Image (cartoon, rainbow, N blue to C red; front, side, top):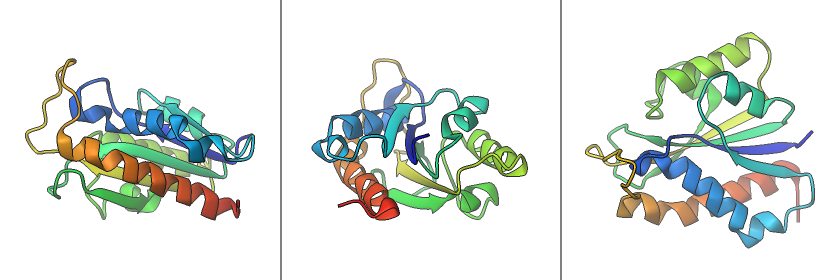
Length: 161
């Protein structure tokens, strides 16, 4: 059992890769490598659905990172808890129904970690999703700050250091 699981959501296309890139950056960070062995794991989770529930199973805390289009400025990072996604009180991920329905199903089955935090990186309204499209400048610029925030969540949740 890993107490904290960080999962990058999205697809291999353009700005929708933001969650994947954030997880790759987290794994390469000195801060993540300095965490005590077994405290946290990070991986790309695709597609959303039963794979996400399986990936979160057994964790105390799941941190999900995904792209979003809610009308906020591109590069804006928002922190939500699972309840805000499930009840529709907040605009959410570009996967919309998939993430909401998955979390709702997990809660109904009593199969969610104690805590689920969702970080959403706002992507431009006109984002391109071709296989060759890289991250837009505002999204790419948000990654390092998001990685630092995720590390803080992990440390604060388990009183590390």
